Amino acid sequence: MIAHEVIKEVLGTARFVMSSYLRDLRDDELLVQPVAGAHNAAWQLGHLIVSECKMADGVRAGSGIELPEGFEAAHPKDATAGTMPRTYSKAEYEALMRDQRLKTLQLLDSLSAEALSAPAPEFMRAYAPHVGSVFASIAGHELMHSGQIAVIRRALGKPVVI
Image (cartoon, rainbow, N blue to C red; front, side, top):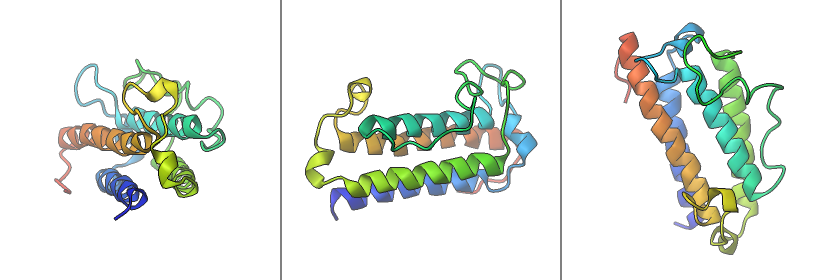
């Protein structure tokens, strides 16, 4: 198995977990805050979309999707239920996630094995020292936020899905 295949596998696993946790959530449930100070699922999804877009763009300009106007501002770090200036439907979040992941995979396919060993852009090197590490970070980041959505599912009384 070559590096590209491994990276695609971990990106796919991360998306499978996230999709499983989102499958039966309604739009209004994306705004549930499981505990005081925690981000809701809408924020988690927006944050993941913005982050993956920036990381892909960091590797190669133009590798991030064009986000809707005001999207990044609608998902500020300090947002909680009721404080987000605008939220989107689950279908809108999922479409943006799908579109960005497609561009991320296209970027990966365009890189040689040697390019994956190149230093990552400076703003990411603290957590992703190499270009290949950037893709691993995208997957790990999605899995981490999936775990936070699992807690929201528990707060909602949703069944265990994985």
